[in-house]
Image (cartoon, rainbow, N blue to C red; front, side, top):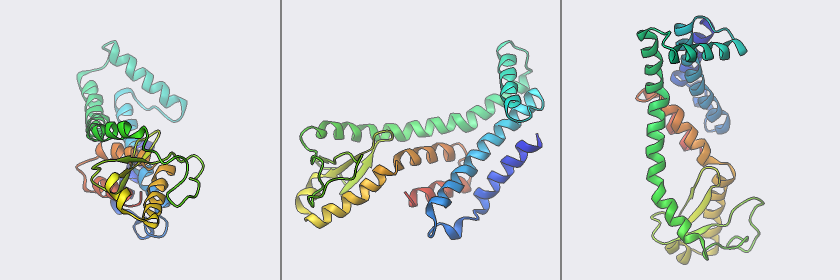
Length: 224
């Protein structure tokens, strides 16, 4: 159990203390990776503490997986006491349950916009060349022009991110403005920032309303 407590305490310490704060501007990727690993450490460590409290010391590696199986089997067969079941259910509700619920809310909020992008995709893509006439980077999907988008451009999607640009902006902007905006959005597209953002939201939503969780989420989003 000491290892699980150490992992949890180390992860929470990084989130609260944030030793990467002074490196965020110089090395944003390292700062983001450190914060995400710290959040994941709190999840993993707290889960290991719960497993230890329910089923005894799980040890490391394969023995931990075996302990998880023993706990699950004990819960299904009714071999666990009420407090053991309540402890595990409490952890599931407080962390993954809340995280799934809040992540689901965020995903549903973008479904309408994604539907509009899909409807606009046919006949609005700009082929495989950017507005300046240069070929798009390898692997980049062509942008989609969407009427009344509300913002000059944005990147939507997790597994297959798509760049959407506002029709009004596309008509009024010159070649340079188009190229700059597309280059910025294609950076999000290539970096899979939608996936990173979703993972960040999931990990920090379970730790909310702790202030350090909100600060971690805001920090990661600033650098995406």
